[in-house]
Amino acid sequence: MPRVSLSVDPLSKVLSILVCFLIFGCTTESRKADTEIVAINTANPALELDHMVREWSESFVTKIDSTYEATINFYLADSSEACHVLFSNNQFELFEGDTDSYNLSFSSTKEHYNKIFRGDMTAMTSMGQATSSDPIPLNFDIQKGITDNDTNDFLFIAQRFFNTTPYDLVKLGEEHARIVHGGLAIPIFYQRTEGIGVRSAWYQINKGEQVNEPGDTNPFPQYFMITQGQGYAKIGNDTIEVKKNEAYFIPPNSDHVFWNEREEPIVYIFLAWGKGA
Image 1: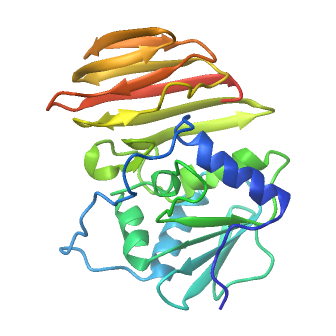
Image 2 (image 1 turned 90 degrees about the vertical axis):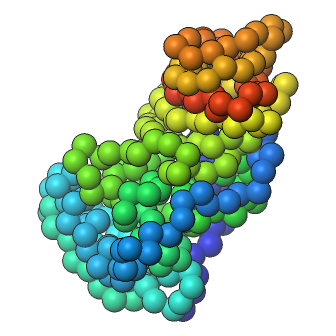
């Protein structure tokens, strides 16, 4: 059975690059190897793939309207097991095996699918990359769009399909994050229409870690709201000390480097908006 890999068609290339660079709004490579922070919860037995997909699908049909039609493949990376689900008229059908005609495919281990199902890590966090060559726990492939906004088609499924909690709860904290771009990060919400977007994420910088390098800039405005800790930042040409209960505006095309030399972590919320975000 074929495994999921990044497609070579233009849509997949665009969205692969989007996930790589849009997740956390940076361009530098990670300073640490990608490691999963969350330990497996041995108190809860591992659920089967079809059970998790059915539960996700039952929740997802409450978030779409009658015009929404999509087909999604799901693979187990550590076995030959696969299934696919069809959505139409606010209903879904779950089938064994994959299908050659689909909108998106996802591939992960049973262990990591269970981690996403329990809410220990979101699908968006699982797909975050610093560069397109970085290994990720949840791989994806896009064959064709669902609407005329391919970016939001992907983001809608990535953010809402895998979340069965009321109001799409996203748990924040080190145990729910992954190292990307030098710091622990969790994407919260992303959307883009005709090149105009909004991004938000949670970050933690532990002692000795740094997010970004001088020269890493973005063409859109950003805000960094610090909720814990104390450290340093280079914003534009200025190096300043930053601390809890402060927020900083980053103008477009400005350096924005954050680092921590203290034992206490720096925690902040990242917001970005506008053209290119």
